[in-house]
Image (tube, rainbow, N blue to C red; front, side):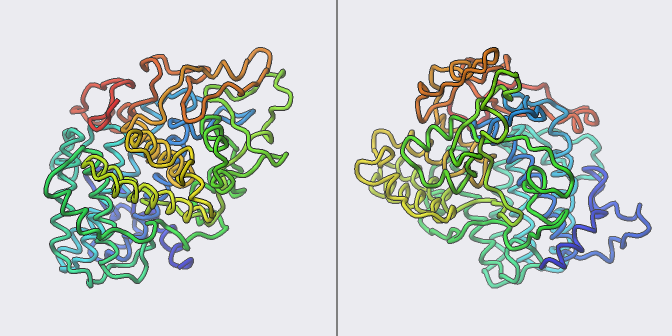
Length: 496
């Protein structure tokens, strides 16, 4: 596995030069011609590019925007994220990577698989295509889709997010219709050596997420849930990382590894720490490392504690994510699926089923974290025991907590959609005085967000960032780019 990974990472020449010229490898005389390429050569490189964008950059920004991360003392690289800000430049590299090195190369895989009638591979490529487009929609809402891969259209239109969701759902159904589950799949890191049946389960989980985000109802969703053919284990890249440059977990390489002299930037946020500590959640110690004193302390959004008066609040006072070189890069977890199922049944007023899936979600999150004691969160008398009346709040907060250790981007998405945790009335300046260095979090209300000390003024009061501005790397070359709706404009699937 590691040898293959090394070869694929070295094959970065497989990346595209534009959205419309996928696999422009003939420009490099050292690259094989397109006619000599195969899905097994291209697909692993696609995966690693997706893992880098989704498992590193989007994890970082998602953690800041959902108040799970804050800025570490003495650094300011991501202070704008801590202020709930995103520029058109900041996400441009990730946008380009997702469209070219991921979606563009997946276009080749789908075409190659179609020509060879390799339908297991076709399904796998379609699932990752749908997943990547979901991510792009959840960042920008409007994004090129229907014209994105037509080489004759240099400036593809931006489709509405709801239309992209509907389109990829149709693509998933079409790909699923071609397989029975026993088909082989090309070389890949996600499910090495497995047949198409595991990709079927992944596709179903993705369909469930898309449909629940859209607020869908009806026979199609009912049939999907009734079939229950969802992953029994978290879908993640695991077992393919090593403690070497360009081969470790991408988030670890960015923030923790010594391969490229990384600058430490992020730490545990008060909102998450204060919420989990309130009911002694054992996952806190699994998701974050204790500080130099062996304690768990949360920093404040909108500052990096740089004033000289902050004695006792140096970088070692704060807690860093417990990420290791071989930590998985999660795409979707069993806990996420169970939370969606709980929400589905609650909306149908089937509260016994909703309760069972809610508790199963928390159990699955504890299992992913590798710690016991899930019952302490949802058991009789527990703070987050199931409540028919408060199910939305409980699902929202517990989903936010569960995702904080595995997938912060999805935490930001679900926070925007579900509206939980809600904003409290407090501000970051209540807890930390940047002039005097006084730090007092005794009045923090667990299970709430707070206004950052310095916050994006384009947002509405008590509102997290709702979307990314369109990437500069896209709008600079596309005359069809629409007018930006604004940082405060909710996504089509948002409820707040």
